Structures are given as C-alpha cells and as structure tokens.
Length: 357
Image 1 (spheres, rainbow, N blue to C red):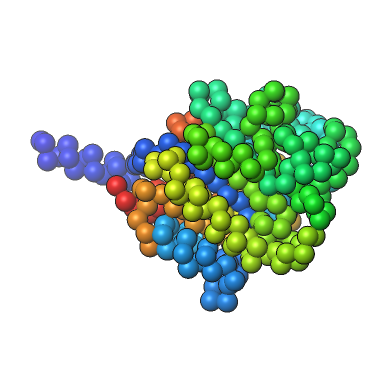
Image 2 (cartoon, one colour; image 1 turned 60 degrees about the vertical axis):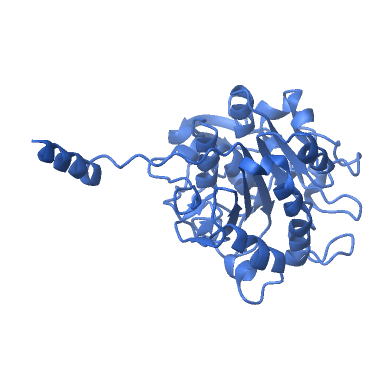
C-alpha cells in the first residue's frame, strides 16, 4: 500500500499539476543595471568591444543566453521591468510628450486598456510594493539634474502635457526620462517619496558605503548605457562606454556589504530595432498588436547575473524576458506578481541560475 501511494504521488507530480518552483535563495539586495540597444552576438560575440562585461563579469556569474526584451523602443521595456505592463502606442514610441494615460478598461493580468504615458495612481510599481512591505528601494539615474532647466535633480520629468526635453543628450546633461520608468507612474510621482527614491547617480556611492536599500535600479546616461555613439560630450559611446561604466561601478557594488547576500542583474532594454523576436509566450496586447513594433518582442539581448548564490561559469539557455525578471525579483521579496509577471506559465529564475547553494 505504501508503495502504491508513492507511485500515485509521483504520477500526480509528473502528469498532474506542475511541481512547485523551488524558492529562490535568501537574497536580501537586488541590483539592476540596464544598458541599451545591443543584441546578444554584438555584446558577447568574438568581436565585442565589451571586454570587461564579456570576459570578466560574465564568467564570474551566470550568462543567460536566451534573455529577451519585450518591445521596441526603450520606454516600454523599462516600464515592463518594474510594473509588468505591456506597451501602448505612446510608450512604444518613448513618449515624446509627457501625457496622461487615458484608461478605457482593464484586460486580464491587470493590463490597463488605453493609451498615454503616465499611469493612474492605482497602477503600482515594484517600488510601491517594496515600500508597502516595509522594504526600501531607490532608482539611480546618471546626469539627472545636471541641467535644472531640463529636469530637477530628483524625480526628474517634464510637466504633464508638455514635450519631454530629455529625449536627446546635451554636452552637459545626458539624462533621459524615457530610461527612468518610475516617473511614468502617478503612484510614484504624486508621493514625496519620489524625491527621496528617484535620485541622481552620485547617491549610489554613499548608499553602497552607508547602507544600500533592498532594491537598486541603476541607469547610466545616454552615453554610458551605450545608446549614443558617439556621445554629445565627445566620448565614444556604444559598448565601449557602457563597458567602462560597468568596469567602474560593478567592482564597487561587489565590494559593498549589501552584495554579501545580493544579486546583480545586468541586461539591455532591447536588441537592435531589426530584431523583433520574443520568448516565453509573450502576449501581444491589449494596446498594440506587436510589442516589438517589427515583431512580437524586443529581441535577444542576453543578461548576466552575479551573486554569492551563483557559481562562476554558469550558463543558462532557459528563456527569460523582462516580465520574468520582474517575477524573479518579486519572488525574492515575497511580493505579489504585477501585470504580465503573473501570467500563467511564466517562469522566474530557477536552479539553472542559482547554482551555488
């Protein structure tokens, strides 16, 4: 009888409801660095100029060879990373005008139906989730506030209804609001906490030394994220400047006390605009027929994850995208899944990534 019970239990586990995903390791701090507009082969292939990223950082952790963006162009990817919301016609084109999102309904998986840029107060981000659970978070944006005529030094965005002046870099200010997803949510910008939590990059140096928040979202300027090449200030840009940014900041992160139980994720918002490939059964709606503009997704970018809980030299070919990354972070912090991060069948990072007990 006991053998029969064991057989039935095994059969149900194999053919009935899917086995429960293993819990993530006891990670306490998540660092995310987002770069721009590079496909997997250009970053990790033999001719890549990203020598530190490819040859030093990737071998020290996990290389996710099948990681994908969810759309084109920039802003829709960043919004997906923190809220699970799919593109609409304005976010898909980077919201050149900072307009209200006008909602006409709600689709499954908490997807707002409508169009526009700044989401209503009842639509949360992971920042709201973290604060509501008693945890801390910050977004660090390079160059924000360098030119106070363009944007303030914290929570930097254009006035509602006006054109966004940060769409292009200047020699002294290369901040881009389209790479700062938190300022597209009333749930963030209507709170005084936006000024405390959406800050310029120099605050990261102080926080790494004095006590980092639980969640850190780090975005270089338009030069150092690889978006521009050459850059407005004369730097080379592209992967050359992005690699220099990583070579400076990643060692500081890894030497910080918070990294002792931390996870660093380095990825790109999207591949080149010609690559509209997708993974993970990414849905197409409800507001645009093709999230990738030229296809179903944002293309294959790859990602690198480094942590004391990841064995150096780990390589994974399990498919992931930005929704899966959001789900993985929410699993770490025991939070509900937002938007398409909660879609049935989507897998978060598993034992293919967390390879060191």
